Image (tube, rainbow, N blue to C red; front, side, top):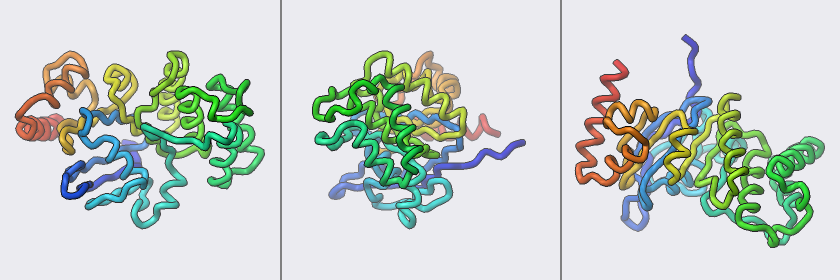
Length: 263
């Protein structure tokens, strides 16, 4: 049997803000080529997790390995390997889209000819080639989101972290991004997809992790979770797990069931 490479390894990851526990000792591994949907209600700790995994926030406790590298010990090396689309990303609005992507590409030390080709390719793909030399201050929210997605992909990262990536996108661009995610995964990229849009996650992701009050309450394929909860849709599963008072009991039951299914 062919061994699947572990690309993300998280152990006992914890984040406290002034004594308040935002993320509570979570652990998981993600293999090459997986598209993992990371779900949870508002305040569950999703964006905090993503910020720790991308080196934006330092964890209170725990360890993060990306492509075999310790994020806390080798942050620059890790960041060369990842792309990140934040939930609320900012751009330098005095720059044009082309200039902004040029800046990002040069920070990654991409050769100029390759950089020029990739910028033009991404902006054309997202329908921005006709306005690439206009200032970002004139762009709509959705147009800026397309530029942020392009920036995350410029250096051909091994791992892509997406935090609500469809925000502001028109229907055509949203469909394009979902298809792009599938193709990137097929090429061996690992995708960590944080979203509130459950039907998109259900159709796009190969695996789902559900977070509630800073703790993982479910982890498996959509089909596994449907079987374990006896629910018909990811939305029903999400409701059962995140609106139940017996979260700890449910999490323990899930853990036992997953072990039994894997045996």
